[in-house]
Length: 561
Ligand SMILES: Nc1ncnc2c1ncn2[C@@H]1O[C@H](COP(=O)(O)OP(=O)(O)OP(=O)(O)O)[C@@H](O)[C@H]1O
Image (cartoon, rainbow, N blue to C red; front, side, top):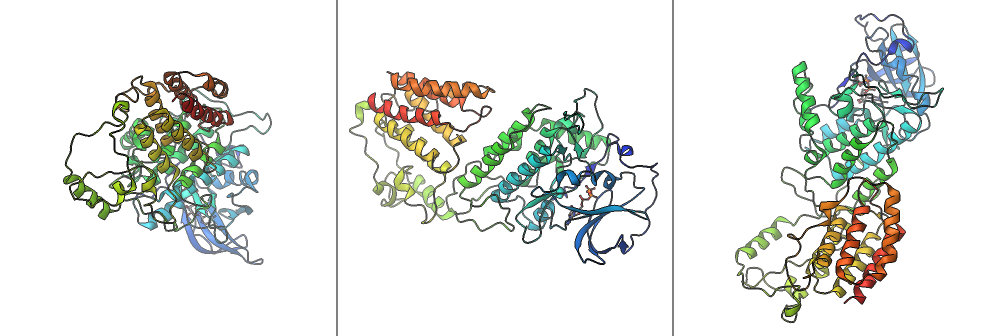
């Protein structure tokens, strides 16, 4: 796995205005054992422009991380970095600066001694990908760190795994941001204004792996959106076997290699990068790329989304980064090459082979058509016997049930996730044979959405609404089977972006009008409107009116039986 720690400094970073005298590139002298009363212990790491030592104060015995840099280094980031620390003091996951200065040939910063970087934790784990729980915790924490930094008027501009470190006990569950050598104030302290954008192409500042497309490939001025895009790429990198493709060949050594890397980064869409990953990662990357230069990102919403994703997966206390990752309570998800997009637990291998054997012996006979009113009497009702008692391979039909009986088969103590329940519900809805059943499905849908703090319409919830829409929209519903895949879907028409006031207005109207609907087709149109306005760009959280609409829909379906 490539070490992800390659920052680049461009001529853009103007150090001459910090404290600089004329800079000439010289060879640094040997590092002394004491710098300004700090006794240097072991080396913790070295970067392009300096080294970090664990250091002990000769008189107070305070132990710190001492970041030292040769004063004549061509890239004197310490001079600049010391001015950023005071702006960030007091924030969770922001290191304290205890002392700084220049002694002899060495410019030093004494900061909190912290633990390992995410880069080294990941590399030391020897695994191709990091586990989902850890990545969700990292996502939540890094997004909140950036929120804090941006709130204090500072851009990080060098987001990468090597610059996110965990604390030492008792702070080992907190991720700290380090290395503010490339950071910059984006709010002018005198005017309170955001730095201006520019049409001029700038030299690149940041790192090869995670810097945003705008900054890295298009030479644009970095702003808040670019810190978030880098964070999104970092999360996706951790979940991708062998990492993002452009990180696999190491640091580019020639301009051609760098150009190839940029082309590869530029052409990678969120969809292609996130194939096989939970949709939140793709959505987040796409969101960061849609942000405007001046726009303030919705940090809380995205921290919530990753929190909900982790909760839906059955993880607890996800705001804490726990390393090594706790053993999963749920059966492990086995993946082939890439993690599964679906978040349901995988079927254990032995059960899978039994099912496959059963399928091999399956005698396919003409079946009664579900959802056909004319033959509902003949349709055998599924019983728990269908699921558990028939011996697999006996030549009888196997029913792989998706209803509540199957849930009882889930190991004791394992709560089916929201995603899992929504998928089962969508299956039920597609098999529903009358409005009464659909009414019950909508009621259950609302209950599932309310089952944890997440009130967001997830991918699975959209899928349920799509199935419901298809059931209601087709005039031959309950007469003709197989509506789902061939019939058109509201997803085909979901608008890209709408302001949130539209969402609020539409849902409030739906809530009132649902009681006046007289046909399934009209209800289908309402389900479609509801899904369209509760889309990604306006926020997928269901409002009070939204829940009231679902109540009304369930009631109305009962009446329209
Ligand atoms: N406060 C700290 N406590 C413990 N280790 C640290 C601390 N700060 C940095 N390190 C370690 O030292 C490494 C280099 O630190 P840092 O990124 O601040 O230096 P740098 O010279 O700016 O590096 P680069 O040029 O790679 O950006 C980090 O990846 C981390 O492993």
